Image (tube, rainbow, N blue to C red):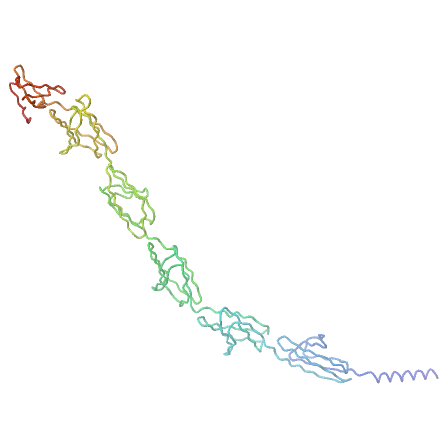
Amino acid sequence: MRRALLALAALAALAAGAQQAPLPATLRVTADPPATLWVNHEEVGADRAFTLELTPGEPTVLRVSAPGYEPQWRAVTLGPGERGLEQFTLARSPIPVLFRAEGEVTVLCEGAELGVTPCHAFFDEPRAYRVLLRAPGFQERVLRLDLSNGKPRVVDASLVSSTGAIAVSSQPPGARLLLNGVPQGQTPLTLEGLRTGEHTLTLRLEGHKPFTHTLTLGPGETARLDLPLERLPAGLTVSTLPQGARVYVDGVFRGESDLTIPGLPAGAHTLRVERPGYARAERALTLEAGATRVEEFRLEVVRGTLSVQTQPGEVEVWAGNKRLLTTEPGPDGFTSKPAALSLPPGRHALTLKARGYADLARVVAVEAGKTATLRAQLVFKPDFEVRTATRTYTGVFTKRTPEGGFTLELKPGTFRTFLPSEIRSSRFLEGALE
């Protein structure tokens, strides 16, 4: 009996405890679009709908988030056995885009201006947008901006210039540049802001051939040109006095003077002229491109020497009608001292004359810079006759004495004076002048 009472008491106690335990609370959570759910800062998972059992009477913090959407928070408290429903509809978060460029570029999207670079813009929907970029002096640019993934973007908003540029250098530098016939300056230089299309460049530099180049310039293009200029040839005119000299330029025979030599390279050269019998002439010169230089030479005769020695000692040497020299007697009185006669190179016809001697004609050859020798003995030729009581004498009339007599050279180097008392007659021989 006692055991039965104890059992009943235990059952009653259990029934009483069961009546005191609270019933659990149930919460259903939905999300549009599917999202990730956090309960009291603990991640539950990602889905469209969730069923949660909550402790009755205790606050529960819910957080729902999805990429590209603004997160939402709510605090929920349910009673024992209570069933709750929380529905989350997330709003999209704006997608940030940074537009940047060198310089100021206006950014427009679907007719609305978003700003001037650098600028930020926020797009509400994750889709593709048509963006227009615009700046003065540059070509407009249309971009397809795809934000379908909802992620932030950085957009390069650089533009292509609507004009072009030409950077010109030349070898050698300093050439005058004409663009489409209009002077622009001297190379090297850069021309900017040029219209697109065809342009003609002309380079001019003294002493060089003009250079013309045509190019087509595209938008935003910078054409870089390094142009070699060809030097104009030089000319040289050579004249000599006398003519007929051989002309050498830098050691190369070019012809006989007078002549003009075209097509020589500009710069330093050596010019030489040569003619037999004349001193060689040489000089350094500098020829200018595109110009003809004139060089004149008066050639100096290179003379030779003729050494003359005669018998008798005093003889006149003639060339035609010109007396060249008169020899002087040497120590013996009959043979002359050697006499030096300067003559141009070549053959010379000479006549040697002395009183009482027959003229002597000789032809001598003289070489430039050399000494030739002429030794001549004239033939004695009496020109006067004296008759005495004993004989007749012929000789060369030398002089008349104060007393009226005569001195004759009877043979080379032998003289006799005739007194008036012994002279029977006297006369100059035929062909001789008194």
